[in-house]
Amino acid sequence: MEKAPSDRSGTCLIAGCGYTGVRLARRRLSEGPVLALVRRTASAEDLTRQGIPALAMDFDQAALAGPWHPPSDLSTLVYLAPPSGAGTEDLRLARFLGALGSARPEAFVYISTTGVYGDTGGAPVDEDSPTAPRDDRSRRRLDAERRVTRWCLDRAMRCVVFRVPAIYGPHRLPLDRLRCGEPVLRAEDSGPGNRIHVDDLVSACLAALERPVAGVFNLTDGLPESMAAFTARVASLAGLPAPPQIPWVEAQEVLSPGLLSFLRESRRVTSRRTGELGWTPWYADPGAGIRASLAEMGLAIPQ
Ligand SMILES: NC(=O)c1ccc[n+]([C@@H]2O[C@H](COP(=O)([O-])OP(=O)(O)OC[C@H]3O[C@@H](n4cnc5c(N)ncnc54)[C@H](OP(=O)(O)O)[C@@H]3O)[C@@H](O)[C@H]2O)c1
Image 1 (spheres, protein in one colour):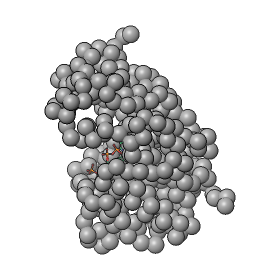
Image 2 (image 1 turned 90 degrees about the vertical axis):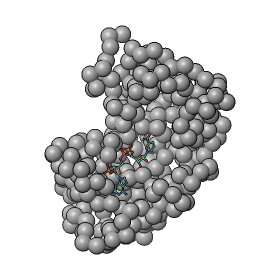
Image 3 (image 1 turned 135 degrees about the horizontal axis):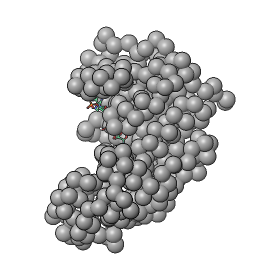
Image 4 (image 1 turned 180 degrees about the horizontal axis):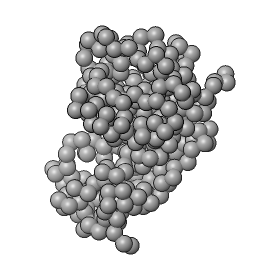
């Protein structure tokens, strides 16, 4: 079925307008109206000060379906809020979908994670690979993907799910950990992982709003490497000492549970489908992405 590209004159709703959402909002605002939704009043006030129209709305509150009405000219929706904090279902998203009532935007873009593929021991995954979430966090993601897909199907709407690996960019580099001398799991004990620069993710979102595409897409840079290799690369480009590398047995003593859970999974993310989006990562090489991020933070050092 051929689907029309999005109506740029209608409002683009950005639900969960945090790190990625703000950069998306800034770019989308040059083309048409945007409304950002965030959890906290302070975040909404901060966005408004930056010229991004915003509302505070906690999707975890049961009263959500109350007085709020989506914009009457709603044309597209990008959902970037993380899933609820426990269980295997994303009830946060379910509540948000309920609050949309009879709204029927032209396109819904949902940002998921490559965690839904589980651990492949470093083997490649593409969009046709089976999902095999290993923990409840990834099960909630898969639940969210399914809910959004079903919601859109029921309304004959275009639905795009982006599975993304770790997002990095300005102010999202492990600089504080490097400055503290925090160790990293040594490369031989950790498998390869992928990343995506935040501005590449934003470009993919804009492409998905414009192009008549639907379904699941993996988004990633072009160079899978271990966290140890990526962190050492950041250190070198930022002029900081390389982090000490430690074996798995020691890592279990000193690294945070969240980081350890992340390190337990490894896969090489590939895509068969990004050609349909007309998207390739600008920062295919993480070195270029790190340099650009440091430059934006005023931390570039002459090489
Ligand atoms: N960071 C990564 O490496 C990574 C990797 C893969 C996928 N992802 C996923 O990609 C998406 C975007 O990531 P990001 O780093 O840009 O996110 P982020 O900076 O953490 O922003 C999340 C946004 O969601 C809002 N939010 C959180 N809980 C909410 C609730 N109960 N009700 C309403 N809004 C709520 C937050 O509002 P407040 O600011 O007011 O709290 C914030 O605006 C997220 O789903 C994230 O899990 C992230």
